[in-house]
Structure formats: C-alpha cells, structure tokens
Length: 575
Image (cartoon, rainbow, N blue to C red; front, side, top):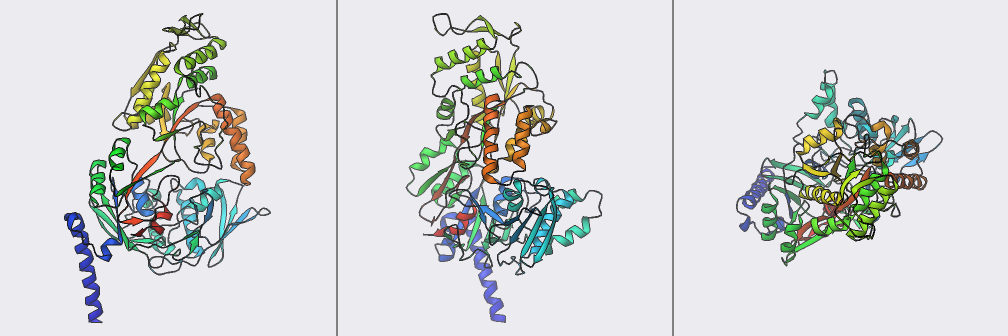
C-alpha cells in the first residue's frame, strides 16, 4: 500500500511539474507521451464561475460543456437532434401528451450511476426556482415521473414545440450533489440569489472530462473521464473517445498574446473567433490551419416602428433597398461573413427560407437610389430637390418630406462603440451616408453598449439601431419572441415594437405545433411576413474563423458555430 501511495504521489508531482513548466517556461514543455496527449487550448478570458446555473458567460460555458451533458445534441452534418445521454429518440404519446426518454448506462464522475431521478431533479429544480435561461423550457411541463432507473416520462400541460429542441437539450446535474444545497436554501427569503451565488469548486458531471485544477488567472486543467458514457460508442457515424489525456485551458487576455502562442506552438488551439486582421498572417504559418464555419447569428438594422416616420413600411423598404449588404461584407468584414436575406441564418438549413422578399439585391448604387426613390414617391414622399432628376440622373437630394408635407426630422442610428464592435460601428456610419443620398437626415451615433440596450430595450427611446444576436438558437422560436405583440414591453424581446395580428396568430400556432414539417411551413410564413414589413433589416452573419496547430492534434469536427463542439473534444487525437 505504501508503494502504491508513493507511486500516486510521484505521478501527481510529475503532473504539477509539467503544468508549471508549460506555463512558466513554455519552450521547454517536455515532448513526452503525456505532454503530447494534453490538448492546450487558449481562452481570451477566464470563466466567471463553474456554477452551471450562473454560467451565462461564454468562457464558463466552454469549460462546463466538457462536464455537464444534455440528453440530446445536434449532429454536425445536418444539425438533427440525436440521442446523447439519452439512448434513443423520445417516444411521443399524443393521447396523453407525453414523451418518454430512456437513458444510456452512464456514471457520474464520482462513480455513482446516472439515473432518471437526476433528470427529474434537474427539471423540478429549474421549475421550483425559476432558473434564468432555462425556466421557460419547463414552465409547460405538468410533471415528470421515473418509470424505472433509466426511463423518464415527461407530461406536458400543453403542446410546445421547444420541448424537443430546448427542454431536452438542458444540461443534467447530479441530484446527490445539488440536493443538500437545495435543502439549505429552500426556506430562505431569496433562494434564487442563494443558488446562483453557490461556489462550485468541484462540479460533478458525466461528460468526457473532469476538472482537476483551476489556477485562477492562469489556467484550468481537465483530465479524461474514464467513465464517460460515450466512450467507444459510435454516434452519428463517429466512434467517440476522448482520445486525449486532458485539456489545459490557458487564459491570455488578448487575441495578440493568444495568436502569438499559437504561432509558437505553446497552444494547439485558440478557442475564439479570429478577427480578419490576423488571418492572412496565420495563413502563412505552415503549421497552422484555419477553420471557417457558419454561425447561427443575425446582425441587423432595427427600427422603432412605434412612432413616425418609421411606422411606415414603405420608408423601411426604401431604406432596405439602399443598403448594399455585399459592400458591407466585402469592405467592412473583408469577406468573412454571409449576406442575410431572412431572419433565420442560411446555415440553419431546415428552418431557413431562402426565397423571402429582397430589396435591391444585385443593384448598383445609382439603381438603388432610383428604386428607393420610386418606392417613396409612390408612398407620397416628396423632396425640395429630388435625388433623381427628370432625365434619370442622380443629383444631390435635399429635404425629404413626409406624405403630410413636413420635412423628415433628424434621426439617429445607434450603434455599439468601435472598441466594442468595429464592424457594427462602421456599418452604422456607411448606412448613414447611403440614407443621406436620398435626403434623409440620418446620423450614426456610437454609444456604450449597456446604455444602448437600456435605451432601446427598456426605455424604447430611439429611432433606429444596429445590433446583433451572436448566437441564435437553432430552434426558430426566437422569431416569435422578437416580433410578437405580447413582447412589446419594457425589457421585452420585441425591441422594434412591431405589431401584426396575422403574424401573432401564425407565431402562436407555430409554438404549439409538434410536427416539424407542419411547423416549418408556419415558420416560413413568419419569415416572409417579417421581410415584407421589415421591422428589422437582416444584413450579415459573420463567419466564425478559428485556428489550430496541424503538427500536434487532428480530428477537429467542423459544424455551425465552429470546431469547439462536443464532437471535436471527443474525437481529436495527437498526431
């Protein structure tokens, strides 16, 4: 027994030496088998927490995704929902509005069994304490029951399409770890505040990796979980590992520092989107590979349609005609984006509708001005000096007048500041210039992001804005949230104030339609209506560009949102 203990202690000292050596003297990191099989990943910032219920930041989510697992995930090719911690597809019983889910044989990282009780505890926990980000996915669940140790039945109070795409993709926590915490805080005055402030030093999960050490401000070290339920299983055509001994997440603070480390080989991957300015240099590195993938994102110009003149769809359509999306993508984003025609990104192939109303597509600048001018003239707008003379020549427009004859008042396009997002700031500036060509007195004004959101979302005190959703759900229910009349309220999701009874009716029907094909028809109608009325003008969807070393690891899996996904970390292996 003494020899065994001495051996474990020696291995622990060797591991600490390797970690300290790597971060203190990266150039002498040993080229042993152990060192080669530890993936070194650069992060821009440190996770804020390892408490799954508080983890709303990107960096916490990246680490926790290796620990906590959902019942179902998206497969990389077609983005279909497939069983993950679950063993098979959910079985639907229309008669009693229930779904039955069977779990794979699985263990938690402390060696205990994952059971139906853990799944039920997770759902009831979210329901009881109304956990932010997850509560809406469970509010329509009437009850959950365990049919046996590995079988759960969900009883729905009413049909809700997001049950499959969102409820069943929530990460599952261990009842044994969280139940004592709940017992302590349940009777307190503000239990939710107590929950989200729980410091979780050693999260117990059933994922491919477990937390070994967190040296705050420096690195996080995770080791291979020998009890990972997916090991040696073939799922979606991939035989899963993980095939590496562990992951070191190194915190850099700046992209400059992380990219330099990547070029030197002291990290194997930088898990963050690379800005266009770095890409050409990285392409010259023989041992660096660039991965470019679609995002599920939407960057757009929005209007306050609650007030004149932006309550006029003709004005919004004319503005949409003036916006040259290809120019923005080519000149501002240097080609690392795709044009958005609809509210649903093209990469979300099942729900995306390609044939929506388009404005000005393929037109040159002068033709855009002429077309927009005709839209406004037909709607009763006039100019003191029109942008197009009787011979069809483009002239300097002066003083656009509204249909009531009054001059169009000065208005402001709010954008985030350049140091927060230079692309959106520049987009606002170029749109300002295009609108002035038609005699519109537009001014683009950057403002602090928090103040911008408060002005747009809470106070509704704005004319127009350029914003974006950097990571949209693959379920299109967000269209209903963004544009339903019921969400036109302070801090509501309907920031533009759009109201359309026809849209509301179709949106509510889509939310309760369980058949995906029938629901797709409804979602297509919703996309068409929004592009006809244009409360938002979709502009671009940036590409996610990532870089890895080619001389250290292989097996990265490309999919929407990039290579940092469940599949990659279960399949990547040392060369």
